Length: 288
Image 1 (cartoon, rainbow, N blue to C red):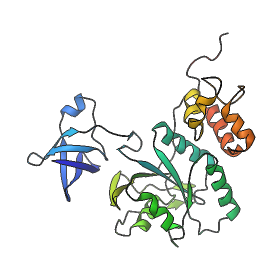
Image 2 (cartoon, helix red, strand yellow):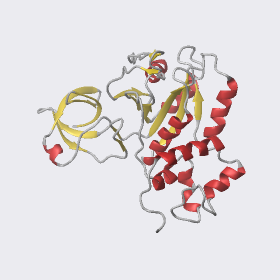
Image 3 (cartoon, helix red, strand yellow):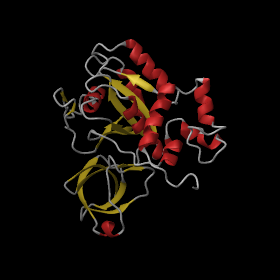
Image 4 (tube, one colour):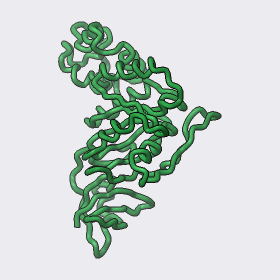
């Protein structure tokens, strides 16, 4: 039988097939083949032995959080508690580009007396790099109808820091989910982990993946790779005169031209430079 892995806990795979959930194990041969079945995988299993026998080829795969075959990433950030970070948002967006997966931003907690000028700035910054941004309150439901439209007929991975309201957002989208909600620790200045596993929840012809929150995200990219995968740069880098352009001091740089024209936000470029400073070179740029 063919099915979809919707959850994994303690080596037991929950597989949805023809309206029934089967709790299965996986063949030991997968380990020898370097294959690890994961949430989102389409599989073939034996209903008699209750063993997964085939993992079908993936269209996409993330190691963190471990999930396969998603069609989009919905990045959830809060405007307060914890405070919104442009740098972290651009890290996540770069991570999505690294895996060739489209992404959108959802900003929560607009009910907490947020300055509207900040919301306007955020929207303009990310619009300049081709990213759609949505603002929502999980409590008052403001903005929720627009966000709901994002999930129809998609396999969506909801990602973000702990405490930003990922599970609250999912519960607001469909109250039947009853995902356990984390809290924000004022003493620690960050969220407390609640979601421990990746799980696929059915929604309007697709699935929503709730995932554990990140306390940090390391891209582990070389400078040359960051110059390719940073949001909107992935559509411009091959127009630069130099094939290994880092978009800093080089002449005839398509990225810097767009920044000079105001087409790309300077705040976005500042975040790029900070990330570039953290990365190392893949190879020596110049001979001594």
